[in-house]
Length: 379
Figure (spheres, rainbow, N blue to C red):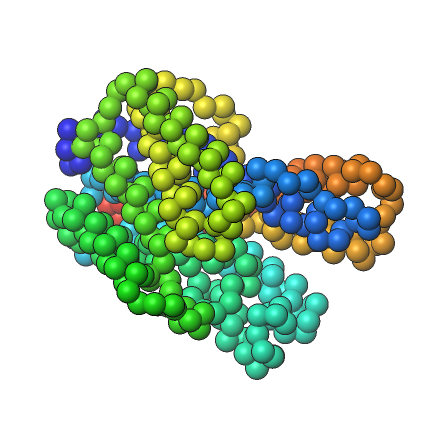
């Protein structure tokens, strides 16, 4: 079966949606652990060490899923500048509106807290703050993370989309050569360019090894579209390989500190996420697993959850500090448990509201504006 003749394959895969939910939830747990260790409760050490300390690896899963979805959902469009432009329009209108809302909340917070649209540790003074804020809203790479720090991942996403927009202009037979050329160029440039200074943000983005995670997901989608397997046993085996790899990666992360090194991070966590996405898709195509509806729903909320949870955590922490309630729950771990459960609940509620009342209506509005677009996206 070729990539051009696969209309019977489902465009939306519940297993992949579920993985997006898992990725967002893992990042939430990671940040929650950090917040509870940041002196919220006097005399408390916060979350104990555990798998949530590698929850940032949910970002790697997001990158692999993004590459997969890009190829999977554009398989039937004819290569052209028009279809590529429509693809980019859908990605831009999917990413930016919700980002602007959440980044805007952070801008207001910084204005109230510091009387300038930036945290003091990210700019040298008020003179640089507005330029920094504008770049943050544009998701333009710069030395420091954007207004809402986790937006650095969206900067990578937009780079992925720009490159893939160019690839979509090419005939389908050039998809894999183009992806491999991109991967080769990334590795060669990274290997021989030497240390890249922090202020060279654009160059650092273009040569980031994290590109390989997106490319890996894209190649998995291409393989399955050309030769979709039907074996449930194969799907389970591939998924278990990914799960075992991820377990080992979490153990060795203590030694390698992968979150601070994109190359090591990609080498250690990238393959695990690729196998998880590959195995999940094979199971979905073969009917080998039934995903709980709540996890699929969480996948629908994943982008909203990813953006809003950090704002919820900041609001809860500042609220406790302003009201002087940090110590009202006494000793032991009770304060940590109550704060954590409340943070998870509020984050899920906020993401559900944001998705239902803001994100989904905006997506529909933008898609009506481009109703004649040949691209049919599910992500």
